[in-house]
Image 1 (cartoon, one colour):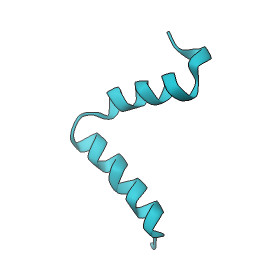
Image 2 (cartoon, one colour):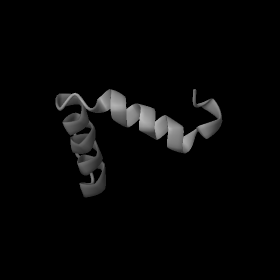
Image 3 (cartoon, helix red, strand yellow):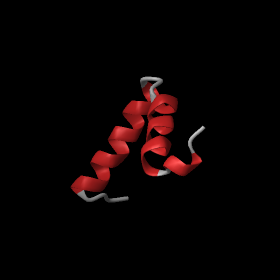
Length: 40
């Protein structure tokens, strides 16, 4: 499998969030910012 530099960096960023146990916090932030009508 081959990645563009940008695509590979995105995968590494996601991996870092998951491995550092920050995924849930990031995902909640992402949803609030990009889908404010769905925020609780």
